[in-house]
Amino acid sequence: MLDLRSKLIGLQNEGIKIKIGIVGVGQMGSGLLANLKEIPGMEVIAVATKDMNSTINFAKEVGYKEKKIIIFDTDGFSKDINLKENLLDLRKAKTIQEKMEIINKVDIKDKLIITNDASIIPALKEIDVVIDATGKPDIGAFISFNSIINRKHIVTLNVEGDVTIGPILRKLAISSDIVYTVSAGDEPAAIKELFDFASCANLKVVAAGKGKNNVLDRYSNPEILKDFAESKGSNPYMMTSFVDGTKTMIEMACLSNATGLVPDIRGMHGPKADIKDLVNVLIPKKDGGILSKTGVVDYVIGDLAPGVFLVYTTDSKIVRRDLKYLKNGDGPYFLIYRPYHLASIETPLSIAKAFLYNEPTIEPGFGFVSEVMTCAKKDLKPGDILDGIGGFNCYGLIELHEKVKKEKFLPIGISEGCIVKRKISKDEPIKYDDVEINTDSILFNLRKIQDIQIG
Image 1: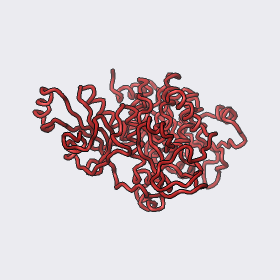
Image 2 (image 1 turned 120 degrees about the vertical axis):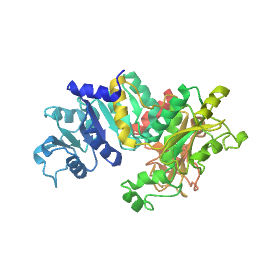
Image 3 (image 1 turned 45 degrees about the vertical axis):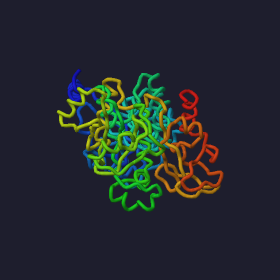
Image 4 (image 1 turned 180 degrees about the vertical axis):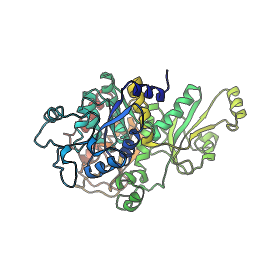
């Protein structure tokens, strides 16, 4: 089997390219658009964005010529641009079928489509792989479901959506003989590489996880973090999900569902520990650590960030001898770690694996082992509207799926827009019965189907 790079160069030499559509042109999506332009055997042919002007300017900045940019507009976007001759107004088209009838009459070969309508991306017949770079579970549900209907591979950077409806998306994708996968480059995929390595080498996984990039403040919010987020080129809501820990919970739930590893306690331990300390901390209590069991997911606050780790052991005296000889420590617990993850820069690896080999990078192959429940970030009263992941009034904690199901806790992925029905105290878990949910959304209905079919 040729390596991925050789395979991609081979495609390019044959005049073939993997045609890609991206939904979401924020920090991750924009970096992906720039990087993919230079990779042989790959071509971005369409992007969907909320900010048309900035995306057009960014595309030109990274080398797309004006005459190669074509705009499909369904929201009345027309001002402040010099590309009116390339502007296709789709406002009169009311359905996706009507939009595609118009679009299919346009020559889009060797063009970059920029649109403010995400529904166009999965429907474009030219596209092979759809990238969800939104981070929004509701949008991810729409994009992934429609990609499956149109038989497009899905590579998602939307881990938030994966821990909400990933198992049903995977099942639907398999039935359509396409790939649904979380992207390489994010922490779950980077840790999964270590997990696969250790498992194939017959090593026992004790704990696997990530270094948290920032301090933990459950009660932070987008207003507090506005300036900090802007200084990092990040969305304040996304930054809040990092700081309040919800994103870490989501990432480790994704890993749990892909490996069968579990959280040792609700919310995980999250100790302060440097790299050298991990083999003394994330080990069983009987050996001086903090774990009540092995085979767990967790995170640490310390010098490991932004890397990932895996603590392992072996019952074999011979293997322990060899590990010591190879300068991996004295045992009985050992560490492997990767001191980086490259986020969307690694996404092309997942695109190539999906297209060339029909293989996912990381998927919820164990179904629902863990998920992320919703907790109140402050005292809530009837009529309050939950603003979801990275917002002002709730945060998430990882918990075993069976406990979430039994207690009827509200998954964080479907919390946005829910209306509070009773007084809820700060830090109190929020249950389905505590809120009114929009039951018309595709996200909720996929979740409902998943609960019935997968449990």
